[in-house]
Image (cartoon, one colour):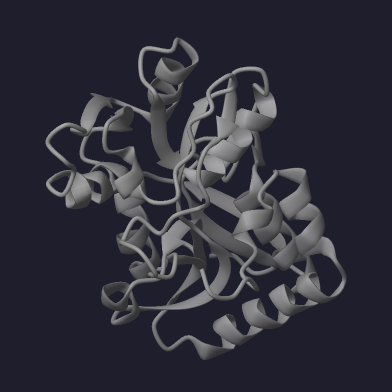
Amino acid sequence: MKPGFLTIGTNFAGPPMGFLDGTTPSGFDSDLVSQIAERMCLKPEFVDLTFTGLFPGLLAKKFDIIAARVGITEERQKQFDFVPVFKGGLRLVVNKGSELRFKTESDVCGHDTAIVAGSTQMAALERVKSECPSDKPMTMKTFTNQIEAMNEVAKKSVSAAYVDWPLAAYVIQQRPNDFIEASPVLSGKGPNTERNRNGLVVRRGEKSTQDALSAAFDAILADGSYDRLLAKWNLADGDIRKKGD
């Protein structure tokens, strides 16, 4: 933490949320928090760590906040405070020429789907797999990362891939001839459940920092900057103002 700077713990895991363009921080999270810092009359400074290293780093005061696609959960709220800025979720993606469409994970019965081993998506499908009819089994093929899973769709070796919806939106934007969205954004927690909100993370009880972040974010909402960032990264479904999903 340095005077005149907003120091930001992050994890440059990849587009569209956070990545390095050469040596320049880029992506929705990076753009958003840079604009927030500007409205706080501060300069942004990023500290790139593994995701698991971010929370100990914040508690050790190695940076002011975390901006790294952090889901706001009851367990995390016992230790940290949040400023909600985005809505997460999952989405099924199919080959551009496919006519398959899915309303829920249950519709995956009878199809083979690419997922990342041990992921939220895998857990979501496993919750409904046992309910599939015997003549429509669910087949899950596991891969080490989400891009690999989507590439299997492009090669038509699986019917669909189940991935984080922001990544799906970004890859479809980059490769429109290969993929198409095949489901609404799903919570991954079952029908009629709200999607997780993602937020900027602040040390518990640091209300002045939380209030300053909230005020800066409200200014970005008010002047249309937030909408422009959502459009830039093809992330309109992540609008934190969306209700009922």
